[in-house]
Image (cartoon, rainbow, N blue to C red; front, side):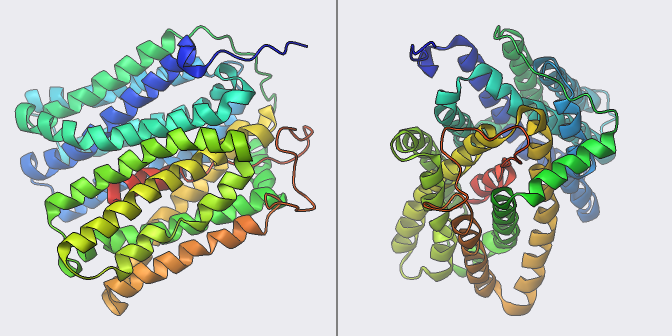
Length: 442
């Protein structure tokens, strides 16, 4: 038995390539989140209905194809070719925006179609990327690797909006989308350069429906899995209810200058970078289960602070800045440990489907939570919605602490011992929530 410790991740060429590919791709996507709406509003005079369609186009593919993508991923012997193809398709779709503007044929429906294509490619990419991490990273280094990937989102959340503003100002909005196309192309090139071989045993099922049902059944029948799924849906529902009224509350009720909102958002991103550094160290000492159990306790902190803070502007900014940084740390710690536990406990043949099931559930509840928050804000006011959201997110603590992840639980699984192949798995959760929180200052 080889007891030689693995090479540190920072010295592993293939991990650096995979991390760089994700960071560049996500940063390019952050640019387009500003450039595409600005193109529709300022150059195409989009109506509110058209803007609603454009906004809905991005998450829609996860609902339409999320479950199927997991089944497809589990049937693959190699995941990297699919990931490269997805990045190239996204590159081609983004490239059509500046080209269509040059030829005078760009329309809002064109932008909607581009968003649908890139969204669908993104769903397929995520379903393949999650199991692919296991091929590149040694099991003992997965916490550090997951923390590194979460740091990518923090880097993008800090640098993406600023880069987008510069590009829109200098190149105009349609040509700023070119940066996204180039980011996808660079990501595909970096992924193509990875040399680590894959050794996957593909699922041989001939029925797509049977594969999907198996993923759903796995996610609902195991106590640990069901608890994590419940926590993820609970957090996302109430987080989106909060996000629906957050900007109005910050500007109109708290009187926070619009420029300072961007500064506070950047602090949250910096907190994410700190969280990536801390999580791998804490997990090595205390284990992923314990870090997850503690992290969930602090999830409502920032939302509660927004709902109760008062006083002079400098007091509000100080409190919100501190809680924003702390929440950036907590979100990354929670998500990192969730991803590690998923890889640790999920049989190889089910990784794609379990991950896709969680993504489907998270995406499905987002629209419902946002709609609920907006409607409640009309009837009961903005502050009550903020406080209700904090209380709702606190319920996720019950899901996690009453699960087998709790210390001394009779069903607690050993930290480093994977279950037998028939054991249901723990899903990946909260990716979309984390992105939404960083974009909306949690």
